[in-house]
Image 1 (cartoon, one colour):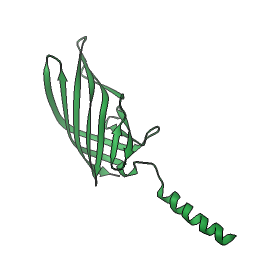
Image 2 (cartoon, rainbow, N blue to C red; image 1 turned 135 degrees about the horizontal axis):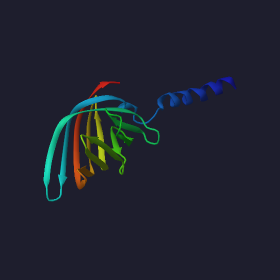
Image 3 (tube, rainbow, N blue to C red; image 1 turned 120 degrees about the horizontal axis):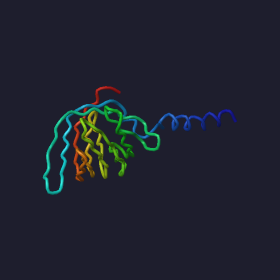
Image 4 (cartoon, one colour; image 1 turned 60 degrees about the horizontal axis):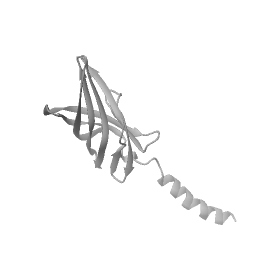
Length: 149
């Protein structure tokens, strides 16, 4: 009986050790170039290049969560292999010098290759300043490199 229990427990232990939260391979801190293109009907579009930093960790109700450096925008995502798909409908807002920007993500993916992630997203936005609001769209592309696990 002891011998059969040993043989039964070995596969179970192996299975349990191989399990973990989906998306662990994504976990860490990342930084890299940020390209944000915003478009407003009748006003054209503009590209706003910069630098972005993100922290990726285990999500509460998702496989992972991607959080920007300010800690104000958390994007839940589901992982399948080396691709994380952002949850649609998440809204992030921010304000700078009296200008407010609200971005609602409609689609996006984070593709992990080694220690790099290509994070691409798009959605709708509302830009508000001086009592006026302007609806538009955005496309954001980040080529990120892991700087810490």
